[in-house]
Length: 334
Ligand SMILES: [Zn+2]
Ligand SMILES: [Zn+2]
Image (tube, rainbow, N blue to C red; front, side, top):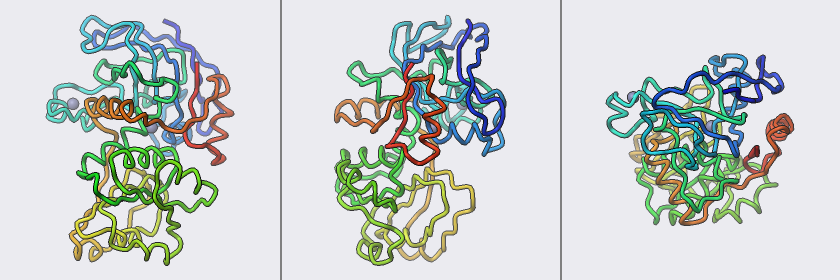
């Protein structure tokens, strides 16, 4: 099958129309007709080769929702005609200890949708059936794409940290990832403090359910919540004064990062030791947890706040994101 896509030919290059032959469908693979694909910051990182693992031409796009149009002979769980979502991962080995434990996102042989293969800025994309996550019937397809990468990335830490509905928690950075975390935690039952240094977003952040927006650059504001948070989720990928956030954690509090900060994070040992605090991180989440998250979203009507662009305006959408104007996730429609 000939697939029509948008690809960057060189690092930081504009996306150009690009077509390729999909080749023979594997026994365990499905082809998905892309209805919507949203833009994740990792797409930009990959276009720019920030992580040194991009192969050109690259077709970005790993927050896909669409319909299964072809299924290999050994495909399980989904069938032709099903609506599914495909995120950052497109295959796991299905036999290692992690896969056998249901933790496919930790499989060492994982295939990533846009690493060494072509992603969802296209009319079709291919993946292993295990990562073609069945969508609940009632889901709003036009807003569901960001849940498949950004959404599960911030949902998994809530489970990992054992966050309780009675907890007071914090989210650092209210952008693409952070605003989804804020909505999840609000519906979880928590009191949510948003850390943001952008005053333009304050009203919107409060509307999304934050009880308070704290400017972390203001020591007085940090002082006002010292020692009160059970859990902090960092969604930014820039170096911050981590120690000042640790002071806002209650004893036994957990600081969790999903933001891929490239520099080493400076964490003073005593800030952890005295209150039995801990620091951790995580990537994505398992296929089963992704399904659970989607059900949770439908039950509570939780969706990312999106702006929609037609697929052929992909370069305009990327510029909008690079200029810092995205409110809060951009979705491309085929
Ligand atoms: Zn992503
Ligand atoms: Zn595996």
